[in-house]
Length: 263
Image (cartoon, rainbow, N blue to C red; front, side, top):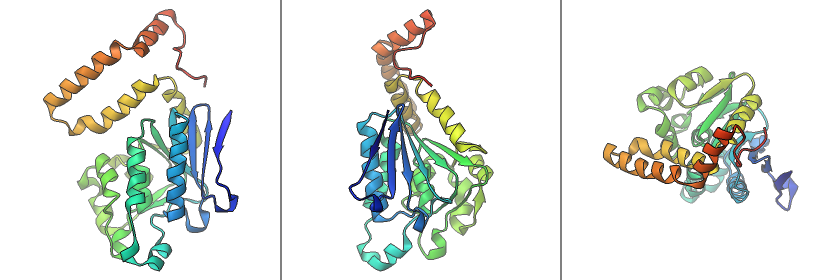
């Protein structure tokens, strides 16, 4: 069964969400402006994340329609409003939600990514891109800096690896993006790769997967003794919990654990 979040006026829908087989798929569909980060898109994306979390999705896939994943800020909207009225809070709230939601997030990219779109993509745990995809951090070329999106980008990419791209605005390709750590998968079949990842995620216990996501985000910034103390406590808690009991019983009995969804 699939559940879809439907705004009242279909003509105003620029973000779609569907939950099927435990996976929430959120699709950017504002093709007239290359899925730029307009107020409308950000509001609907926030609501789509609400729907995914309410459904307790095992994974959230962020994808798009049209030839661009996301072109970054809606410059026409910004120019009309004037710089004093621009509020970036909705955007960095979205980036934080993608990073912090318990479900693993997967960016499924089959088109160009520019500026703020790279931040949106980088906020996801896994990033699957078409091998022909190009990227550019063009902010300096319009007189601004990649400020807000530097937070998720520099959480996964060493500053020295992305310095040239941020300072010059020059485009780079999918292989370079993977080599610097900005993307995790480069493929000629994005849907198949995403399906395979989702199948794998559904085999793990939901809490174990959520805790693993949290570990990946938090442990690198911890002092070593703190990390050992906190991770030791977490390990003991999980090993003594019901999921571990079920998982080990399933292993012994050569059956699927109760949480594993059919793939």
